[in-house]
Length: 163
Image 1 (cartoon, rainbow, N blue to C red):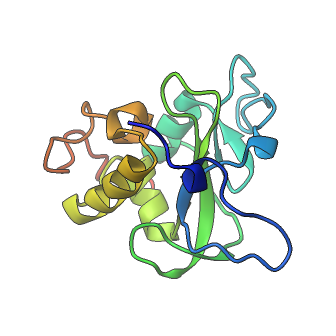
Image 2: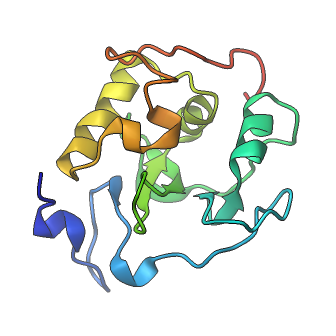
């Protein structure tokens, strides 16, 4: 499936307001390798929350409540799931991609994404938007089929922990 031009290179710049809450990062914004903000692991390009880098091990500790929660200011962007105004940008690299995706999520959906406990409706909202970019949920670590069944039901939710 070819990625549409407007998804690959959305218009940007002064005066442009994008309603896209899930998008490919602009090519000029491909991120440099930065160490994890919690453990300093710098072995690859890790996910980012609010501009801070988190390795998978620290994301797991965060989900389990074994480390202090993420505290980031919200931006005036709508959540990709519920369209609530006020979100934090989550950036991740899809499998086999050098270009990250950016997902604006409210605090509730950020917690649920990290803890692998999105509801079926929330999962479907993200799946639909990813499909529009030519990306499958199995290409996004926190959404792949080890964590969610084909109907978007969580298989390995962390119920007690990050809240």
